[in-house]
Image (cartoon, rainbow over all chains, first blue to last red; front, side):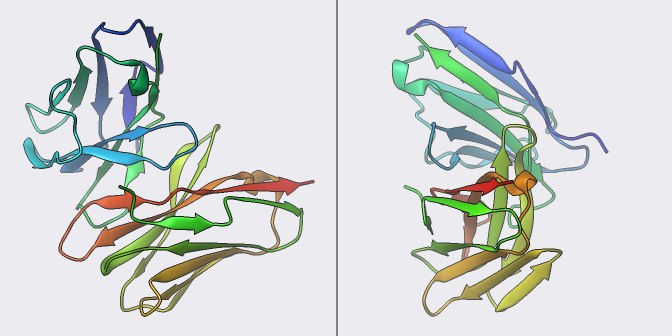
Length: 113
Length: 111
């Protein structure tokens, strides 16, 4: 069974630029999550989708972050414009249901200069 | 804000010894999960324990849950160098269906 795929693996941009991350979850997983993990901390949930609907985006900085999952499968997370404090690893995860184990992708390491 | 806190923040042991990590959380939960993260394999689910369970085993892992104290512990027996990683507890709050991660314990197993 293929795991959660993410791209790119690494991205370096300058502040105020835009960036987008892509995630393809495990086939059949209805729930998809985006997390932000700052160095030395645990992952923090940014947004949760159930199929193509948003379940929880309470911690998403909506003035600069956006995410979509148009066909209920893959998803994109965008930051526009980026700030220095957005430097982190962005993790995508999927699960059958929200309360069960989650399967994580390898993450995208973003560096904002 | 993050739900849980792991203790200790860092732990260094010799190969073959046991490692114990603790997690405290703040609200009532549906279940608690432990994850491992290392550079080679990313973040991987280890074990899930439900709020009505008190202990669970999986191979060399033993997890306990005390809902009255809002705490959990993860015991890794007969540690190996490959167990070197960061370990996170994560909770699913009652009435919610997403995870809140703790701050993590960095485990180093010395060969």
